[in-house]
Length: 191
Ligand code: AP5
Ligand code: MG
Image 1 (spheres, helix red, strand yellow):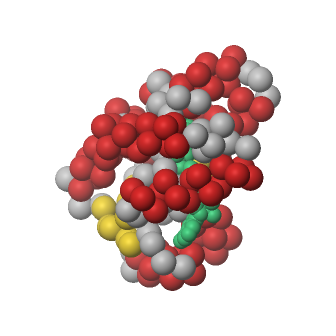
Image 2 (cartoon, rainbow, N blue to C red):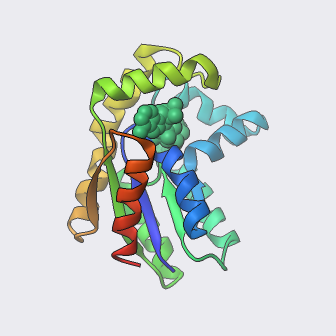
Image 3 (spheres, protein in one colour):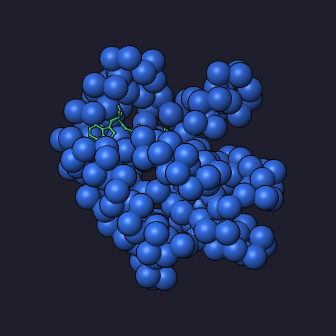
């Protein structure tokens, strides 16, 4: 198994690039943002709790997302690898993920970190907000809160994996094709 974390701030292109990577390599895509939005759409108690945080641009509590990921990993024993998108987002989530993968006798192969300037992130998300229907995209204050949350809590995830020399920075501005080619090069060098 070869497992990847696609890392980066809100709007850096994790979802866009994940779609292409899963169709090329056959990874199982696990996006906690998508999973949480499914819970909200189904009006589950977990979704109702998560929505309060997401609408303000804040992270959902660790135990909620760790539980969700743990179930997904357990339900997919026969995959070529997992592509984690938007998870882990705190140091506690990183530690929990490492433990979970260890139980499956596997580990994170590489953390691919997309680098995009803050102004470009805001521009992309406001633009997507016109059509996405995502309540966290249509208000610049909430978008900026998501970026603050990223710097406060999520950038620590890259620091955590840097200790294990697993982080590769990839420029996240330019065409979607160019960025995809850079990501594939990094994966092909390690797989
Ligand atoms: P989540 O759904 O993960 O959202 P996010 O990380 O804020 O980022 P996005 O999904 O908005 O951006 P992306 O990097 O996927 O970029 P995309 O490809 O879409 O999380 C939402 C919320 O859920 C969080 O705020 C939190 O509350 C909660 N949550 C989720 N996971 C959690 C966790 N683990 N712990 C706690 N809470 C959690 O691209 C963005 C836009 O840019 C698109 O319109 C796209 O078309 C465009 N674009 C992409 N690439 C390019 C390019 N190269 N050039 C120009 N435009 C581009
Ligand atoms: Mg996304």
